[in-house]
Image (cartoon, rainbow, N blue to C red):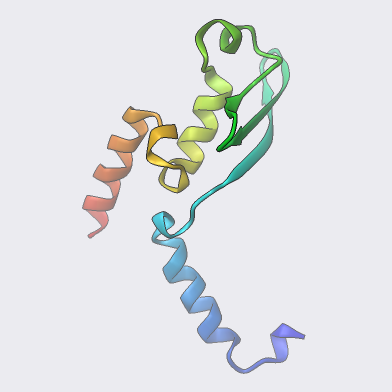
Length: 100
C-alpha cells in the first residue's frame, strides 16, 4: 500500500511541483459532459478530429461554442498551442508571470 511507503512524502512534493507547471502535461484526448443551461453537451477533443460538440447548434454554425471554450479555459496550458483559445493563452501568460 502506498501510504506505508516512506518515500510518499517526496512523491507528494514532486507532484505538487509538477502541478504548478501545467505545461509539463500534454493532453491527447479529452471527453467531458458539460451541464449547460439548456441541457447536457458532450464535448470531445482528439488530435485527429479536433474539438467536437455535436449536440450544440452554435458549434455546428461556428466551429466552437461555450462548451468548448469552457474546456479550453480549464485545460489551456495543457493543450497544443493550435487548440488553445488565444485570449485564454494570454491570461495564462499573465498569471504565470505574476507567480514568478
